Amino acid sequence: MLVIYYDKGLMRMNALLDLAGKKGVVLGIANEQSIAYGCARVFHDAGAELALTYASTKAEPYVRPLAERLKAPIIMPCDVRDAEQMTALFEAVQEKWGKLDFLLHAIAFAPKADLQGRVTDCSKDGFLEAMDISCHSFIRLAKLAEPLMKNGGSLLTMTYIGSVEVVKNYGLMGPVKAALESSTRYLAAELGEKNIRVNAISPGAISTRAGSGIADFDGLLKSTAIKMPLRRMIDLEDIGNMAAFLVSDLSKNITGGVHMVDGGYEIID
Image 1 (cartoon, rainbow, N blue to C red):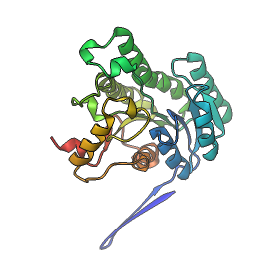
Image 2 (cartoon, one colour; image 1 turned 30 degrees about the vertical axis):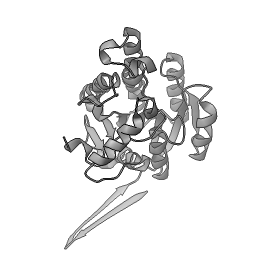
Image 3 (spheres, helix red, strand yellow; image 1 turned 120 degrees about the vertical axis):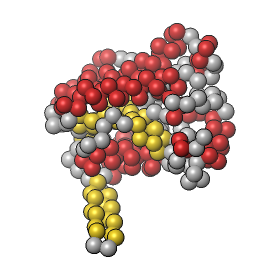
């Protein structure tokens, strides 16, 4: 639970970020340095109860200890390419909790050959696979989450500034993240009448296993640090804090947005 106080003369704000009683699903944890895990840790510390997933049996030994550390009552496989696994996850949520308050989608993938080559040269199969896993999976998850968000809820995904400007070596993921951001807006418009909010978080460059697939990623990290007005790199807690805010009641009127957590990187040419 996080309490923020602000005093100025007779003005006083007491904003309470409390996720106690909220139930959430987090997809995308691969290891302790995953953005999804950083968010899950903040959700847990703020009082939320979590269902956590791993993408494969190979990933399970890395994810399960982290899930147990966060006392997750639901720990399940969920390869978003597998419709049966996705359905089973939401059936488990229904059986355990009977509702869902929030969901975090922190999943992105593109075949290495397509990711590290020119967009001009990307294969049809590679493009479709990247779009399916990184974008359309969020839409499928939203559809499954909708009936469980009986009293409203919050859907979150992760994007990057390469969606709106050309970032060297980001390649194919740029168009894919642009589609993800557009999907976020359309989902927000369609689900708003059910009090389901949909938002994307756009972190600055951060060292993760997924990021390491980008060619010369160390160079991107260095150039980001130089360009950022705050002259400091973001960390997992920064992203987690924004995610916790966006699934909390404090953000009840915020939907359809792309929220930057990048030390001001996006404002500098």
